[in-house]
Length: 156
Image 1 (cartoon, rainbow, N blue to C red):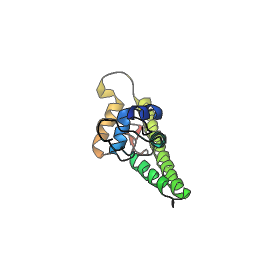
Image 2 (cartoon, helix red, strand yellow; image 1 turned 180 degrees about the vertical axis):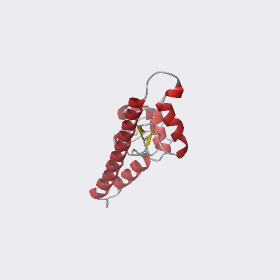
Image 3 (cartoon, one colour; image 1 turned 90 degrees about the vertical axis):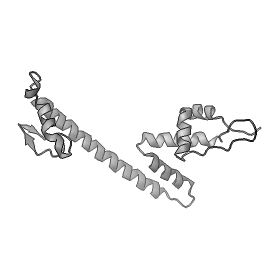
Image 4 (cartoon, helix red, strand yellow; image 1 turned 90 degrees about the horizontal axis):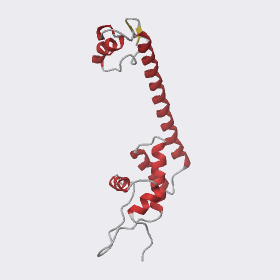
């Protein structure tokens, strides 16, 4: 009997669902084992579990499936250098820091809107609705695209 894991056992060992493995196969992140002749189930090599864990860990760090595919290609390339991986990790960190700054800008804008809102009365008196209504046509995010702009005392 050939050693290997069924898809169910591989999924449990990697801490994912069977559909996750099938998805990774469709994305060409995990190789689908050949179907055995006659009756039988596909058996995954033990290193498939390690590969899936690598993919999940990279996803938790914010890497996209495309980026993970590139990391896996580097991992398989004997000529690859640690600097290649470091470069990708540095780019990912820069991206994360940009997203954090963007979220902080959004949070500050929401704080300004909430502080300026009377919190009672009809919607015609709601500064939040007013800001969203008057800002919705310019393609930016309400109150966030240019923090130096103000409308009715609310910084945008």
